[in-house]
Amino acid sequence: MEHHLWITYAFACCAIALSPGAGAVLAMSHGASYGPPRASATIAGQELGLAFILIVAGVGVGSLLMASAWAFLAVKLCGAAYLVYVGLRQWRAPAEPQTHASHATADTSWRKRCATGFLTNATNPKGIVFMVAVLPQFIVAGRPLVSQLAVMTITMCVIDAAIMHAYAYGASAFGRVFRHPRAVRIQNRVFGTLLMAAGTAIIFVRRAAPA
Image (tube, rainbow, N blue to C red):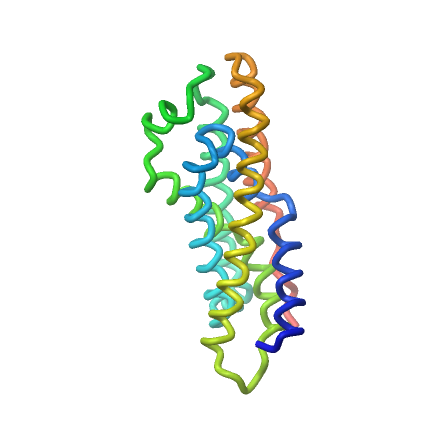
């Protein structure tokens, strides 16, 4: 990838990562609940899901999803249902002001947090729609597709991981101020509501109109 093209793509990645969405809400939620170090497992899963979407879009499967109404609807409903489920669990989480270490030993293993992050991004049709629209603008015809996709995937995941960690650290710093049970309950319900709202919003994502 040419230098000027890569810089433009990097700016686009920053804009995508900074835009509010389910990934940002999840990073903040887990950052506030478990602390940034443990939220890294969630963010690692998110980047795996993001890489999956980039590869799917890059090899053309994303275009197939965009063309197939049933395939797109299935992905959309699965993604929406999963986010609503995660949000509901956050809403109903205990209001005790647990420490990050004790909270993480409950039922939040590294694998579970990583899987939550992966599924949140991998089943988000909004991401697929966006990547299908954006990636072709940066793929140079006549050059090896694999190397171009590798550069774009690594760039996107590194930038997104840095920004998601910033969200997690910010939420953790904010959360440390409010450790009263009532404040914890409000925090859980705010993040739970945001996650459920993100899941509901996915239902209204539309396929691109056929050319």
